[in-house]
Image 1 (cartoon, rainbow, N blue to C red):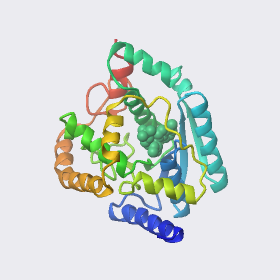
Image 2 (cartoon, rainbow, N blue to C red):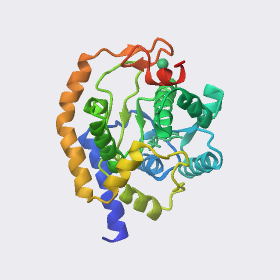
Image 3 (cartoon, rainbow, N blue to C red):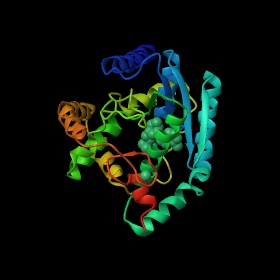
Image 4 (cartoon, helix red, strand yellow):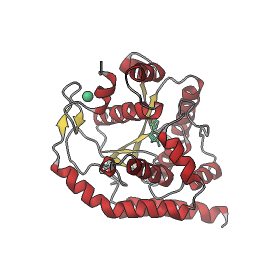
Length: 278
Ligand code: AMP
Ligand code: ZN
């Protein structure tokens, strides 16, 4: 396929996902969770190109040079495309860098680096997007991420963990909860890499230096050598059972965490369970 055809095909696929799953509206204020990596940079660039009202939100996790480089990449794209950028400093939020937050948690419980970071990021994104009066949060999650998550939940014996996933979350409506959309849901990591490269987007291609020895990495390695069709099958078959999972979720009440007052499925949210556990 010629490069120009690849680019057109890629953009049409993203537009199609947005339309088919009714992910975004031109009237929405969209907060793109921008990490400086290829996935979120690509979707930020594309949504702006498609004419959406987008702003970027970068969480500075203070992981040394890696975080500095990522911030630089996000700044560059936002300047180039005239996108408003918000930067949230983890140190200002929690008084310490992500590594210290993680170590504190790992002294008490056995949990992977990515798990702690993921929970803290999700909590911060929702809180900040709400503060910015965002109607939707957009992340760069793609086909490879999503098929990995489904297999991980399955291996852990809890497919219900994925009940709030799919191309858009938010089966449970709540004024404190900002729905999260994933317009790259059906697109492979390989194609995103190619697109970002062809468009010469400012991107940090290295992986996070702290992403070591998690279940996700083992599942990623297992799926990596598989055909793309297999990953497509995993998410397509998951989407068939998703309405049932969402139905079950709707029966559960959405609560507000007793400690931080943020929306949660339990009395104490996952972030507070990790950070405030004695
Ligand atoms: P990850 O959890 O690193 O796999 O990233 C998944 C998605 O979360 C990315 O595609 C981004 O949309 C978002 N994200 C990750 N890290 C950050 C960050 N430091 N700041 C803002 N958004 C982020
Ligand atoms: Zn909480």
